[in-house]
Image 1 (cartoon, rainbow, N blue to C red):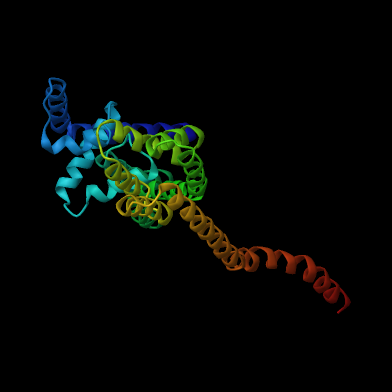
Image 2 (image 1 turned 180 degrees about the vertical axis):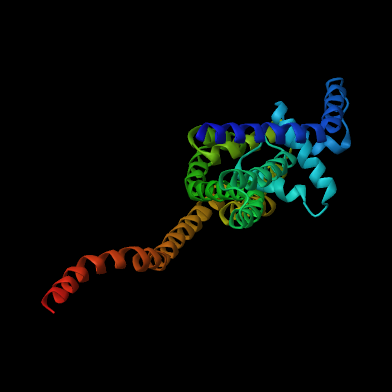
Length: 299
């Protein structure tokens, strides 16, 4: 029985893949033609954002991108720019927004199908499958948003260390770009990746202000916005960068201390649910059940 169930799920997945590939064959051929044209030095304006953001090389990624493009053209309410910003915040530069939309479509089809295959065509499982359509549609986006939130928290937490390192290197006589390059070598994690992207943009000819503005757009946190704003104002007003960085480091550490105090104040409220619904019932069972059994035995 289990073998037949596994075989049925496998055949269903192959059928869905074949159906999606048949529906998107024309678009895949068009994408291959555009890729061939791009190899000769030409590119279409409609595909420029995806190529600039991250080209999908594998056949599965191209298939998902084609599905996402079809859904985007069918439903104009899906904005690729918003999805692009969330992918950038999560540090997923190798995936295009249309590929993520393709993942959402596939999971929206596979989860209800899996529920129906496992549970049958009863009314309860059909209703559960209908509910899992929305779950499958939102699941990839929720994963990307969670990864982006964790990544931005790490960047905001490491930002005071970056500013301290910039203060030391700038006051030692190193230029700002050189200080950023040195900081990118010594700091690990997503903040180092963002600094390397900023330095790469400067190497390609982008100005320091524009590169820092792009850094603030990719890592959109309160600390990063204050960092970029302070640098821009210091350069505009002619203030020493070392002094600006020193004052900013003090403000960053105060903000980090305030965030820690805020989380500490939220901890009792977050502990209330497991305390009431998990710990107290077990404690009552251990304390009251022997006493109740003794009372019943005496009566």
